[in-house]
Image 1 (cartoon, rainbow, N blue to C red):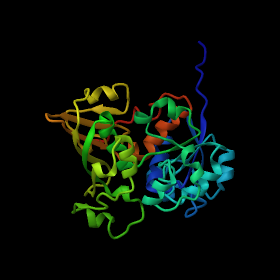
Image 2 (cartoon, rainbow, N blue to C red; image 1 turned 135 degrees about the vertical axis):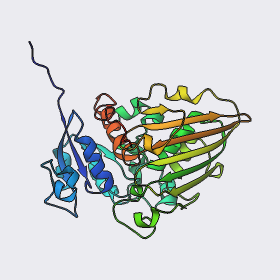
Image 3 (cartoon, helix red, strand yellow; image 1 turned 90 degrees about the horizontal axis):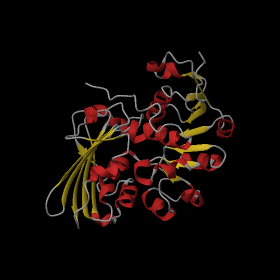
Image 4 (cartoon, helix red, strand yellow; image 1 turned 180 degrees about the horizontal axis):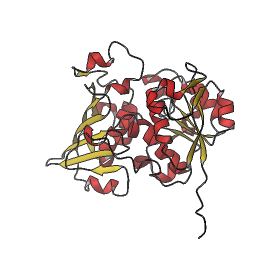
Length: 336
């Protein structure tokens, strides 16, 4: 009997590996059949075993280093930037074109400097904004992502909101979105407004119609900011986003389910709940098309998986011509 030939593995590295996004990305990469870990870097925790920082990964003999980005890129096939926005700009500029790059920050999601400055600050590398492909495969297309050298991962609120609006692009008169997120979306460092002991018994909206994910949402929806009310809200749970979009359309449209018929991580459900997606790369969606151009669209994603690390790996799979679901499709949601 002949021996089975295994697909070659690629070397993947994470710069900024010790935040919530980085550590969840690592957990998922460790499950991927075509990946081996090259570098995990962090300026805060150099020469530290990953299991000492995160005991749930204690069985992996991996060490965090402070290796320079240039050396990381030189010895990697793909580099993930799991850094805060603004922090990633210079490193992304240094590595662009030298290695396949997936940036999970907000720094290259927008394609013009003026919009970026309005929601963040002046961009230090505006000439690169159009060099990054926006990494929402279900919207921009798998072929577009597959051809990319550098990818900008969507924001978590933006991702689920875009999935709700995308089937109706060109026909949206008004969109009112209420989206509730868990405390892990605020990152690892506790601050007064987002620390879990404060929010675990509370519901609070913030940055209403000012949230930095708005430009991503309106671009995909084909609408102006004046046609959107966006109400991001803190929820009393750790993981997940639950979103509802109340839409007014100017014409009847085809059933939205057909738009996602060939998307392996989109599940059209009779009802949507956060408990149905936690720990997985699935986006559960529900559409109720009423009369008079009214639509109720609901969606749920895990903000750390489909909203961050999972979609980044989905993009990596496309960029390296792996099966789109490799390392992700078999990860069922955690329940209960």
